[in-house]
Length: 176
Image (cartoon, rainbow, N blue to C red; front, side, top):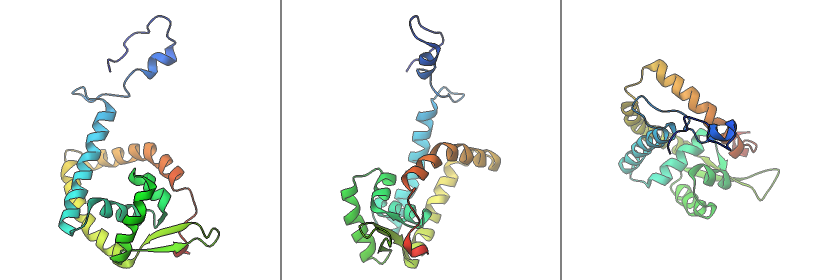
């Protein structure tokens, strides 16, 4: 997209602003492009850690997400993984068969099933994600600790409202 440097005729100032990129790096890359590739660096680190652990990357990512949220419903996990909800059942079956998660029915709505990491799953994901964090740390090495903290805070401002919307249901019954 070519950034708008003037207000075209018959276009309001608000419409002109919408066509401008959110921001650019000193080398000219748009913010969205940079965030996309930063995410891919982290995703590659998770995939390499999954290979080391001998499990599919999607399974490790699901287990990591479940641990971060202390359990989720299948629907919420599907949204966070950006997959169809129907793909969660076989994924959960694999993780449950390996003893990495357990399913629990919600006390207030028996139709709702929570997927929660077991102690074994928590231990495994902590060990495996340590490898991924090392790779991510290397990717973000050009940042000072302060800049890394500022970037995390800024990304949190963007991502955390969406996370709250997706995971806005009550906590897992296993945490009571």
